[in-house]
Image (cartoon, rainbow, N blue to C red):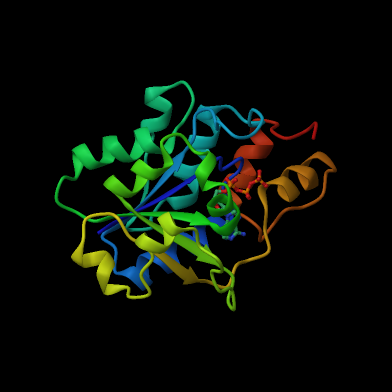
Amino acid sequence: MIGVFGGTFDPIHYGHLRSAVEVKELFGLNEVRLIPSAQPPHRGQPSASAAQRLAMLRLAITGQTGLLADDREMVRGGKSYMIDTLQSLREDYPHLPILLFIGTDAFNHLTTWKNWQQLFDVAHVVVITRPGYSPQLLDPFFKGKHTPERCQLSENLAGKLYFQAITPLDISATAIRQQVAEHRNPAFLLPDTVIAYIRHHKLYQNH
Ligand code: ATP
């Protein structure tokens, strides 16, 4: 099974990295592909360029087996729609279950994503929740996909909706950009190599 973790990663931080490691272990994944969006369709333009966000991602995962930086959204260019990304991954991995990890915020807006129902034709959707969260009032489409059994994910290539609680680290890229702009020290929120890159390239000076 492979995991997919999309995001703006502007910049990547320990909240993202810790979740990627935890889901890799929990679900016994061969790899987790971190995929930075070129142009996120549902938010403003990122502050750092696509190439810079990818460079920071690569620095952050250096030496971590099983975490991969996947640049297909940047290579493709244009707006980054997850359905296109998953279809391209499905071509690369015709016989492996694909798990798309999204946060509860993203799940609450999933029905605004391009061709959102088709996501389930190519992947499972795993919603990362806070501990204690219980999915309520799923609409009939999601109810039909929902399974409480993790084994269903490895037994099918795609098509299931699963909720997984993970204790999140209270870190956000927005807060990090703000700290950098205010000349505060973001140490221990993200890897030192990424902090050095941000300083070297003078990123996030005007937040
Ligand atoms: P921003 O503050 O710029 O909105 P962000 O820190 O939320 O950024 P994104 O790149 O937008 O990061 O998020 C990518 C994915 O990582 C999303 O699915 C999001 O839910 C998840 N994520 C963000 N922060 C954390 C965190 N602290 N712990 C776990 N997952 C996170």
